[in-house]
Image (cartoon, rainbow, N blue to C red; front, side, top):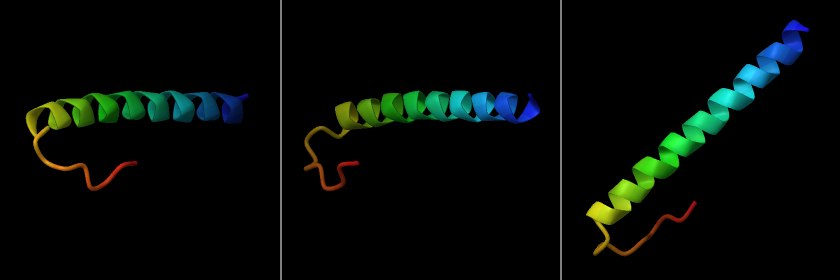
Amino acid sequence: MTNELDNVICVGVFIILNQVFSILSKSILKQYSYYPIIMVD
């Protein structure tokens, strides 16, 4: 039970970090939209 709970927590944190990263990257791209996109990941 604890292993399943740990897995759920890890997945939740991973999803939250992905959402935060996507929001930050979008805001950065809006700020520096005139720069060519070198790294696409």
